[in-house]
Length: 233
Image (cartoon, rainbow, N blue to C red):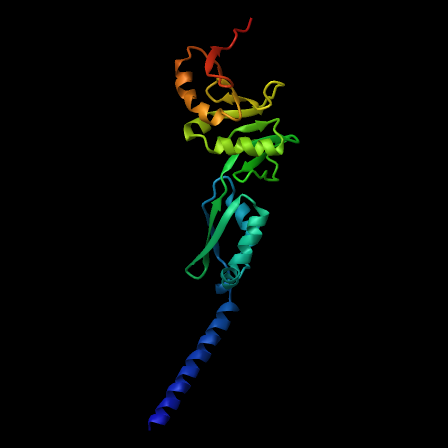
């Protein structure tokens, strides 16, 4: 009697498994298995559509395949868009997909070839030409790659209030000082500094600027002093 019951239970289990696989096959063969909506979170300088295009996910994509191969899809997207630091996928309602992106911070733009190119926090220049810079980031001028990486890393370590006040950083070496730079500030002042000491000296900028009666130059190259712009005749 017990043996017959065990056989009956086994048959029932087999039927359940068969039905499950039939439902699964029917699901993957139906439009219900396709991605319906894609939502992108975490983008700042990147566009949501840029991210979707990089993943090659569209309404013909199978949701199960996306989740199964998420690692390879992530790697391909990061290769196409180097400013992506990480990317993850989450599904909702078995139809909708959420892509969460973590971007590498933008450290500014370099002007070349009649356009602007973004610099990210690993010193890499993104090979995407823009007609104009976006966001409140500085423009770097006359820097070669090694020096550009150095100055952009210095910018990354500055306080937020100093960062947002910087408009342009120019390499301006002299025979006496190959590390000399000039900085245009958004408040109208200009700064002369040395790359080797600019990070520590710029913390004095707000106090010095507040004491200036007219817009002018704050010289931090050797010491720290300021003088107004010469009046135009």
